Image (cartoon, rainbow, N blue to C red; front, top):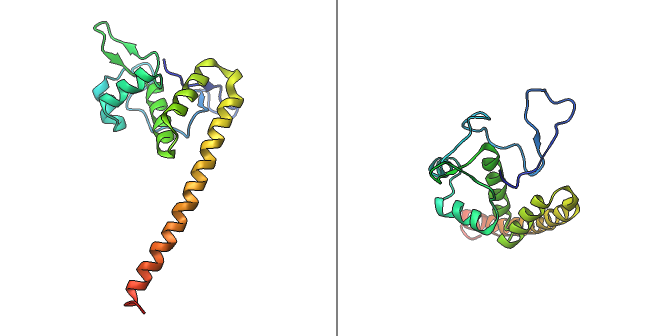
Length: 155
């Protein structure tokens, strides 16, 4: 079990669908159906693009918790774990510091009473992303002007 939180689906959702993930956009399709979703670390590496070292590190620092183990001690990841890793990967792309990601994971584990704190953390990250996008747009404008300059032969 991971720190993924779920909520019941909206009444309009089809009854055979699983609960909605409140932590991320709809995840990629899982390689295996629920109930048959036991992945080795090498399968998760192939599916996510993360390294085995990163997966172990995420577990060690508290980003991934309660990873099931086989009778021989090998990690066994579930579809919920894959969904959580997809969300964590998105947080990394935002530039969120690892310490904030770990804090978010801790808040999720603490339960629904932490919704306001989680929201604030995600809102701050969103503000940072919006600022970064603005900086990138400015940079893109500079590049476009330079490209235009060279297209016209410097005239």
